[in-house]
Length: 105
Image 1 (cartoon, rainbow, N blue to C red):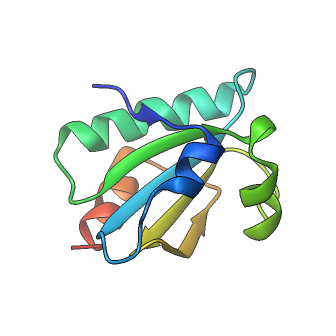
Image 2 (cartoon, rainbow, N blue to C red):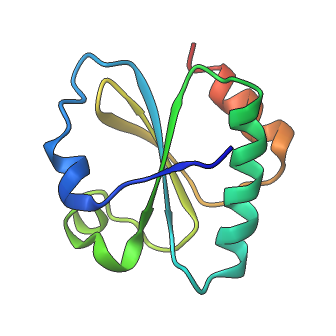
């Protein structure tokens, strides 16, 4: 199962308000740690957490990167009703990410 890739322009067009919980992984194609983070999130997603997972290339996401002050990748942004409320830079473990997503129910 793969995380849905989305472009910044498409994300900005989505009507996220009132639509539940999302997680957006900012990564870079040449970042090894990002690939590990993505694989961990794929495992979490397979466990059917109550969160819609997306990924975005930080190199083409200047508006969100600046608005949300993202300082490095990988960065997992957790959103409730379209508003970011938590930024995770250390993915730690699959178990940690699973509990994080489950806590959003």
